[in-house]
Length: 88
Image (cartoon, rainbow, N blue to C red):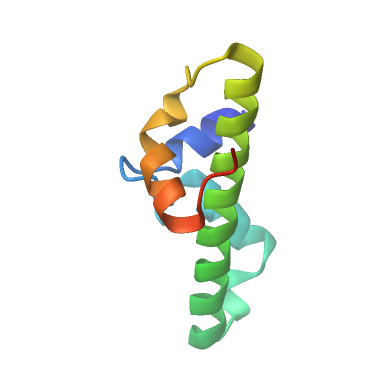
């Protein structure tokens, strides 16, 4: 279920899709409706950064285990590397 949430939350460019089930779930946990507009913007930026780090970690782990990137997340490799650098 978690992998499915992650995969469905990522666009082709590796960016977090703000209309995904994952974002909706996280909004409900963090009481989105009570946040100010500034807090919402900061929350979204932090979430996107953390999401990219998680994707990079998962890609690295998969490569170490399988010797290659054989996952549905492969489309995010270049976007992640360009944004936060390579973890290899």
